[in-house]
Image 1: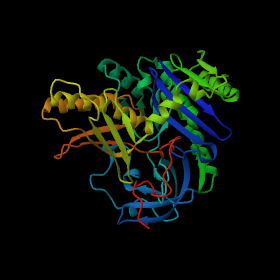
Image 2 (image 1 turned 90 degrees about the vertical axis):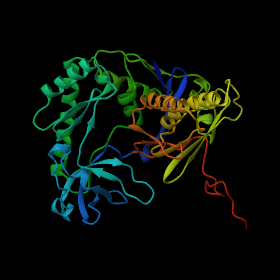
Image 3 (image 1 turned 180 degrees about the horizontal axis):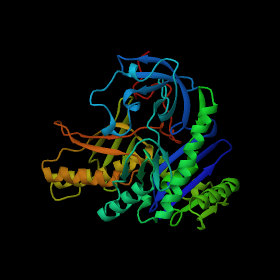
Image 4 (image 1 turned 60 degrees about the vertical axis):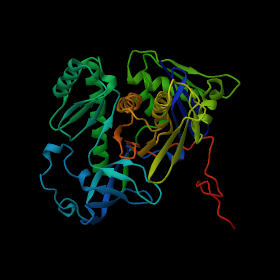
Amino acid sequence: MKQMIVHCEPDTIQMALIEDGRLVEYAAEREREQSVVGSFYKGRVVNVLPGMQAAFVDIGLKKNAFLYIDDVLHPHLEKQPKMKPSIAELLSVGQELIVQVMKEPRGGKGARVTTHFSLPGRCMVFMPNSDYVAVSKKIQFEAERMRLKMIGERLRNGEEGIIMRTVSEDESIESVAGDLELLRMEWERIVERSNISQAPALLHRDLGILQRFMRDAFDPLEDELIIDRARDAKEAKSYLSDLIPGITPKVRLYEGKNHIFQAYDVEEQLKSAFSRQISLPGGGTIIIDQTEALTVIDVNTAKYIGGDNFEETVTQTNLQAAFEIARMIRLRDIGGMIIVDFIDMEEEEHRNEVIAVMEEGIRKDRTKSFVVGWTKLGLLEMTRKKARESSLAPYSKVCVTCGGTGVVNRS
């Protein structure tokens, strides 16, 4: 069972997800700065760059959005041409088209957009033009995978595409069909708005942070939601009841005197999780440094002296670190390239054990991650999909003197 602890302020919502007493996800969103990832726009092409195989599209934000050729071609790989055409053959300046935001604007860059549309529901992701059915890799039983694939093929029309989500496991065909019908109706509304709108125009905004987490990470039959604002508690109950008709969701209004994050031990866990140095249960430490290009994580034995020999001590420290690193990556919402400098191990078997723990840890993460393997220098490489900006750590900020480098120039 999971607990979703939600703190509401006049213009901000903070969400903490707890599994077995441990904080595993944290996110915050200001209403005036709501994420645009997942939103649909009617845009106008303002520049086509054959040399980059990309185009810039005005969707009404401060910076023009970036549209790469792979996001213009058919979403089904088998239906793409063997020789990739020039993007100038597919798009022209002034052309209007529907696009969906897949990455937030960041720094001086505009949003990344695509024409490979997807609308997530509770049981599935609906893709209006993808023409295939897939099943979440987290569903491991082959018989259930085949059943869900057959259901998807039976329900989809024309070139519709469907990805069965993990929560669809053991769901009835009626439940899956109801989810699909709602998503079809949403797509039809997007197309209708596009037909009557002038570019640039917002056609559909994805759900806010609370509804997204209830849809994607909350099991209304098992999990508990605790929230400290009556209005939002009522809305959460209504949303969950619409999501699964006939249930009584476990939504509770918190009315205690202490801050809700203090009452459920979220505050202390946040302080620890967003520190640069994190202690491991056996006395070892991990140090996390995020740069513009990648995130570097260093593992140290520190005070850990367990084990009968050095190799055993090192391996145990690395296994503890791998478990905690997987949790930290998910909790901090770290994306992009990640390099982990584990303590050197002599045995190949021990290195494989570390990778197995990492892969088991990231399997619980809803964001797609991939462990690449060991480099020749003994570093572990991995990647994690990045769509939204990481939530600002509530207990840290960049130093105004050194700018986050940890080094101050001599005056």
